[in-house]
Figure 1 (cartoon, rainbow, N blue to C red):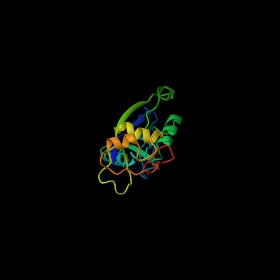
Figure 2 (cartoon, helix red, strand yellow):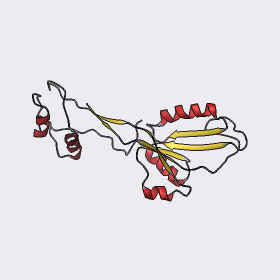
Figure 3 (cartoon, rainbow, N blue to C red):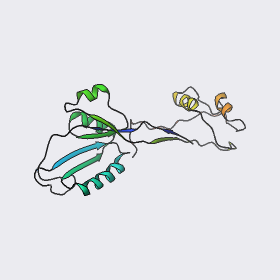
Figure 4 (cartoon, one colour):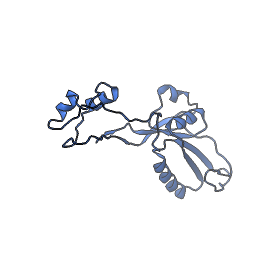
Length: 178
């Protein structure tokens, strides 16, 4: 298995100027008049960390209600840009044009990093398979299509690489880790 570091997960934050009055339907507790409520959403990958941070923050600042919905990076970005969320989390940064379109401004804050793991299931190799970045990139680009490709053989002398097509199994949706 080969692990590759992904770009940092970024949190897009806009300055919230709205101060809301009592009643926080997300947490179920009543807020004092004039309390601040912030709504966030996006990345399912970031949701456990967001939950932990928000619980710790809530203990220190009960006058601020912050909610976060794990709705996926794409939906979080969409709702943030539409102004229905005060902050969003995504594994893709906003473009300059998207940031410029946020009327109150936006700030990108890296909060988390994740990994992608490449796995294989080949019997009888006689040892671990080595893949260089160039080789696994070419596998995903469709340039290398067979396990006995000369570039794989060069990286793995002594392994019994089968004359077999590489079957890629990848997710079809754009994002998410649930």
